[in-house]
Image 1 (tube, rainbow, N blue to C red):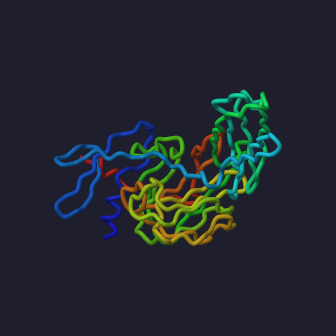
Image 2: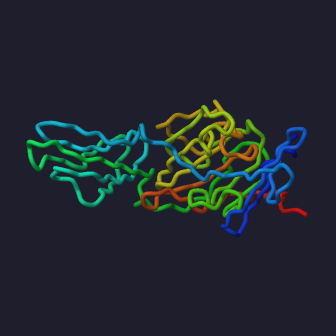
Image 3: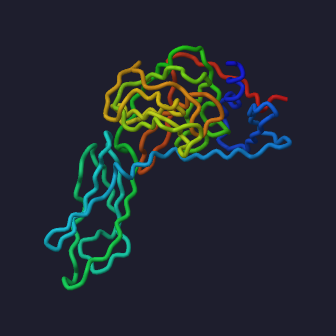
Length: 297
């Protein structure tokens, strides 16, 4: 069974090209799913959704406090990590104190910060404005420290099915330096670096609505973040705000989200200015690569 799992999720290995390829998905009479860069009868284009985005609307938001004719606008960050935000105002009418340029600020973890105080230019008329808030996890002023990662799993040996700059799905800025490691579902996933758990997802089944599937995001002390994706439903063992050490049990590997087969997707990211990008990293020990089955004659 495991060789078949390797075949299904080991379609692509590390590539030196950052150009995406067209992938075709087909299902045979026995229900076995295969992926290839070559179309076959009955195959369909497989659309990879490069939208590795945690929805933070309930944890990063603005609050307007009205008192004595003054609207005080706060931004609240309920996460266990700093967040860079950009606050602007549209449709401004009869307002004094609204900044002409967007306010960009880093909001510390678990903090509320007042960013604007608005009053009516004409007291007899109402204030009219629409706050617009953008955000990105992390503090862009941090400096990534050199670190070689121990393997974030127990068992194996397993091999890389897609590496950095992989043409299948590792071509976007958030995943360019990610690695996919083929492994059977239920493999123990452990922390490859110490830090604080910032976000988790534990309830997704199959493809679900989030391309990342179930995941754990850990903030390291240098401001970088390690993200462990496509985890098995109900297997996440850590909670947001919990500090983990190297080797701490996080979850079990799975096949959830936008996954072509059972594997762990591991990526290291940092905020470089209102946006997360993946950064290069290396493991402490060599990890072999699977053959590129899709391109074999």
